[in-house]
Image (cartoon, rainbow, N blue to C red; front, side, top):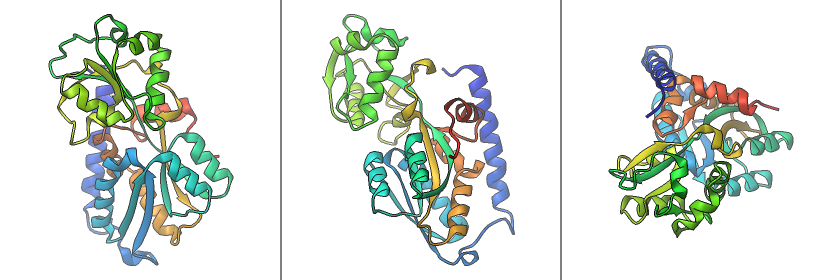
Length: 285
């Protein structure tokens, strides 16, 4: 269960987002496609953000009449492409260092904090192994499900988290599955092949998995910092700067941020998000 201050902060954020959403429906507050020189915008993001971006894009399309051409894919591959010859107009990326690199090389005009991820333990419904604490993953007899070979940062992040908690060796000894896909570990937990796994909270909010596991918090002190941060920025190849700016402003507004909250992220605009912005230094270079 979340602690009281975090719950109160979440309720405050949702209330402000609702007020903003209602306000956006009022006459005169909606930007239309004819305000811009183009009626479509190309947006790329790392695949982990897709569950939030897709409904957010749909809301923006309904609000403006602008068509969003969206691509969500493996973050490292998109980042490598954009640092090379590939182009897009708006990019939502994972890992602050990538956004800074895109800025330093002139590929990105600016970026803003978008959201943050967090990590939880998941168990089968009913929690048959009575998992209560991260250290329980090293308890003898507990069947651990991990995906150490999953594409970065998925597998690596979980390994770093377990190491910071001081239980990596014990958890690995208890592993009954060492897979290559974080989402497939969820199937093993849901089916009861394992007792516990570590995943991002966002994974538990996916329609395929929502409500099918028990979700147990992990202390933030064990989270590996680099994978926590997501940013959004306008690229130098934006064909209509005003349109790209408007989209980024929408996504980082209370109305846009609510989609990231629902998808299991910590919105940058929330109280907790603002704390992480300062703690992790998520600021344009």
